[in-house]
Amino acid sequence: MRVLVTGGAGFIGSNFIRHFLTAHPDSEVVNFDLLTYAGNLENLRELEHEPRYEFVKGDIADDKSVTNVMRDVDAVVNFAAESHVDRSIHDPRAFIRTNVLGTQVLLTAARERDVSRFVQVSTDEVYGSLGPTGAFTEETPLAPNSPYSASKAAADMLVRAAFHTYRAPVIVTRCSNNYGPFQFPEKLIPLMIANALEGKPLPVYGDGMNVRDWIYVGDHCEAIDRVLEAGRPGEIYNVGASNERPNLDIVRRILSELKKPESLITYVKDRPGHDRRYAIDSTKIQRELGWKPKHSLDDGLRETVQWYLDRRAWWERIRTGEYLAYYKKQYGSDAT
Ligand code: NAD
Ligand code: TDX
Image 1 (cartoon, rainbow, N blue to C red):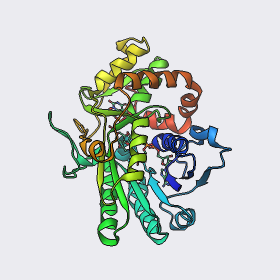
Image 2 (image 1 turned 60 degrees about the vertical axis):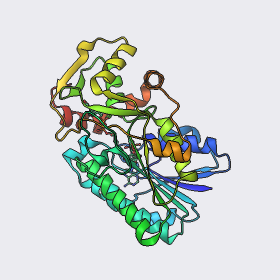
Image 3 (image 1 turned 180 degrees about the vertical axis):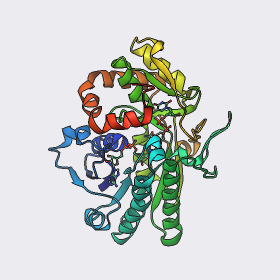
Image 4 (image 1 turned 135 degrees about the vertical axis):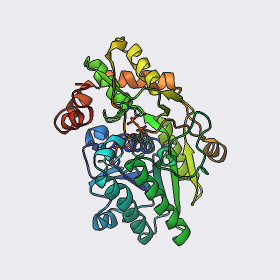
């Protein structure tokens, strides 16, 4: 099987490619990525000379390059996206172009090329925010609250339309918050680890009691692999590991793991429209496809903290130039 992975130079995509090539020794992967600020070929350095792996630089919103790269491909897994909520609040344009237009360009090319499977990697954020109880199921109505989640929900609707209109073999996955190796240090967990290691303030939004449902990236990759293999076209599969935690709890665990003082925690201005709580019900994928997460939050977090300790050069190189300009814009003088 030859799989086109878009956004494979990012966090989850690079973890997926590594997993997929190992789990399927006869498979081939084409990684199509624009290499935005979040894309980093260093994430896949060890595959540079792997004959079953090919990298093509390109934009999923560009019809011509997408049609070209989709030649001789059996399946598509679409990870490519603008993925950071805070950036979408500053400027949503790139989110609409990549996440919405880009998804449609991929869907159209996949139909023209008669691709036999298309997995759209979506997010639990399309369901909006939960009250203190309950969890998102695949039937929960979409109610996105940020430009990012609105763009992902729009993409999900285009995938749905491709199934209903053309009977395209498409499947949507909606996963909760991922963490693990190679996550860009603008997201909560790697940002807090890197700041703690540098003795910088840890900027917690609002009261720190917003709840996220955490899953180790490797478990998400295995879920996508199962969906690619056995998911039913036209279906949606929620993916999560039932690890709901308030942000403050996560930040405190990181500090304790690194033996750093809680005095580094700094409460900063809340994110506008900040969703209060996410929780995902993944009964459907567990029951239908036999997937289940393997990592406990304790083990996953410990491994992740260790990875950032071991790979300091990776994140130090990122935390320069454009990153610092973004950091200043986002956190101002509150957290520098
Ligand atoms: P990321 O920001 O780390 O990586 C995104 C990748 O897409 C980068 O390599 C970037 O260069 C590439 N890209 C961006 N625009 C592109 C374009 N126009 N054409 C081609 N490539 C482009 O993101 P991530 O955290 O790895 O997320 C991957 C996918 O998973 C996204 O679709 C995201 O919505 C979804 N998701 C993420 C999480 C999470 O917790 N990180 C949870 C659920 C779903
Ligand atoms: O500096 C921070 N301080 C803080 O308190 C940052 C960056 C985040 N937070 C809070 C906001 C959220 O409640 O931590 C929580 C997690 O924030 P992010 O890491 O930005 O993730 P989130 O907004 O929950 O979205 C993530 O999960 C779903 C990914 O970025 C999305 O791509 C994915 O779809």
